[in-house]
Image 1 (spheres, rainbow, N blue to C red):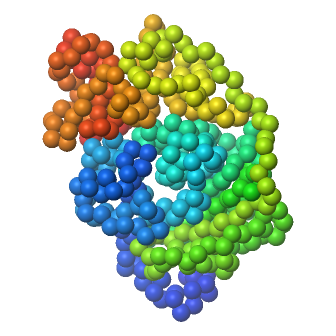
Image 2 (cartoon, helix red, strand yellow; image 1 turned 30 degrees about the horizontal axis):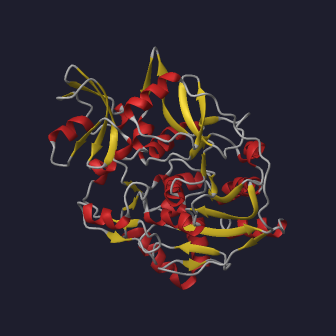
Image 3 (cartoon, one colour; image 1 turned 180 degrees about the horizontal axis):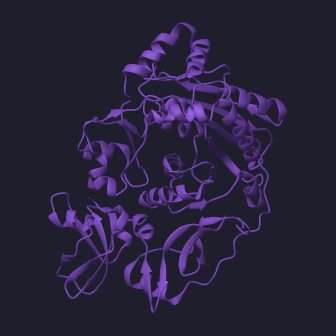
Length: 443
């Protein structure tokens, strides 16, 4: 493996006697693949019983597991049902350190493709609010799909800079995750393109951007709130130096000591952790945990106004769903309908991709339910349904987008793998028209 000379020199200075072991890990080892159980749909114990592959726990994440390198979990129906998310094991650590709790308001500032947002949402257990933001519009498609597949109802998806988020969210969030864009040294052994990118955009370039992101994001944190800053890089410029400089110039923030565990070690400060590939089975990562001093105060924030629910949607609910919608506000973006959190502040002036749970679309004289709607429902909430097991060939026909012969009355059907939702179908003349999204279909 080719490594830039400047990088080699930096690592030798940081690691001293451990440098040889570190470089051997980069040259000779490949990271083990991981998955994280989606506890919004299934608990860890139940999943380990269902898993078609042998699993080994990721020590720093209770929901995380290594799976065999020859397995193909993305080809399995359980993946389509959103029971797990494929995630590099080290990347599971920042949310574990952030420790979101049900009912909290949490921001994932640089969220795409969404692995950490999904982990946050699972910890929130459907309570509170998740704002998943990403600056780059071309990354929102993957983020949206992952949030829908995971069955998340309490997420807002935005496409904004930290500065613009201050219009609605100053002093708002209980917890913030900044998985900052970085030089990507932790990805060197996984992707040689990361080395070329490092030479084009070295640590000093990334450091300037990271400092600006942290300064602006801190304004969004309430007094008493917690912020986790993380990168997938090794150097101190993008890690300890960014956080240390921030704390020196912002006296209302303080570092929170982190305990070494499961191969994770402190960086140069007790409020930092390092994940080194020669010490753990995972790629490189840096984590820092800081808090804003003070006590949480009640905020008088302008809320999003709720609109009246359309008659076509109410008719659909009456025929097909057992759903309590009183806990939500309703909003519409064109013909697209959303159920939103009642605690959501006004999003006026922001670039909004999804203001909440996307439930469907109004078309000429009918309502068409969304994939996001069915994926977030429980089986008992769907009146008209069809359920397949892993042994049913119709399951695989459905996941491939094929039409299926059925002995059912006309109308919408929720399609399930055992008790887990997969999508919609619509029966007409004893044929189930497939509404499984084209981009999700099994190949």
